[in-house]
Length: 440
Image (cartoon, rainbow, N blue to C red; front, side):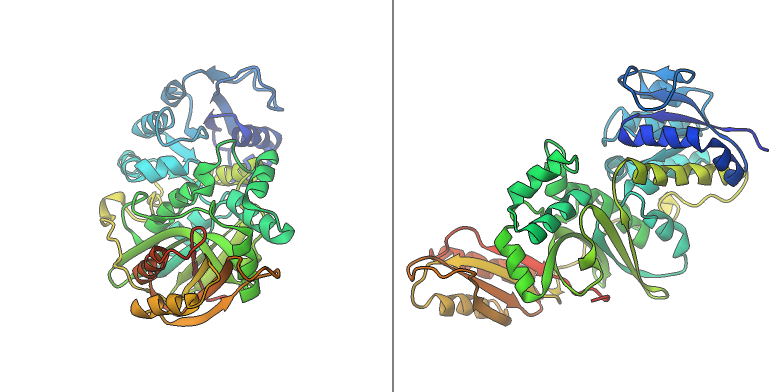
């Protein structure tokens, strides 16, 4: 049997501790599968005294992750600290510059520095694997980097944040407000004390930018994504969507068009009968549409210690199975030097249409005025109805729901702005895209 593959792990939080336990407890099975033992020889963590459920007393400890990356004993540097900046960035760059393989679960790091790090890895002839960075235990990176070779991908989209999906699912199933569901998500550990990164869509945007590059061969453009979170989704939106035959999901969508690449993250109405509408709770789902295969939908756990550790372990196993001199898969699907500059697509019609909710004063002419502003902006309405679950007094504000046919987003925004200026709205209007996946 070949010599042991020696691992250094930087970060022993939930994922790092799970990975360490798996590597120790399944040492013999992994050796048989990979053709060589996999051995933890060094770790880096802030707290040496914390009980992680495993004895690491015989492993070298480093207070500095960069020092761990510089250690000559390791063959693979596993980065599980998180964050786009140092120490993760400095440590990963140090390891790659030394020709040491790297495995990471850090989507923020890759979104910010992925092309640079891929270039170093390819120049030094080492692997940079990151399956756990996007959608946890779902093998979407391997699918795009390897399994779909020869396919031309037209669209990648999905539910990529378990926190948001949990909140939206709980709102629908239990009729609770956004604030109540967020509080419960925090209590269960699905959401951070400061949940903004998740609920405002930033986490999904980082993951989407990586998938966009793998799908379309452009440089990572994490700052060039239309971004909208779920914090303004109300229980009224959830109920209205259900009445219309839809569920609301936070989707990341990247697609190729005739004028460039479109990247967007926002709440979306999807048909209740579609497969992606059935993905509930903290589960993630990623769909890939291509010319040969058609649509591939992958569903699975998107976060959590074991799910993420499983993806990290798969990346380590791939390195253990690789042999010197073998052709390496390019980090970003194709050599970093050949990645094209990101070209943002021009605005075009959104074929799914839009859902628009407005609360208006109950006075004569309001419906006609709303419809008039829509017509002035070239917007064709599929329906316009008063939506209310309860009987109210005549003078109370009324909620109206509009569903448009295919139209331009800027036309919708102009019409809504003009209606807002009329002065009869009570509260902010809501605008949500409607998607109709192929699987619908």
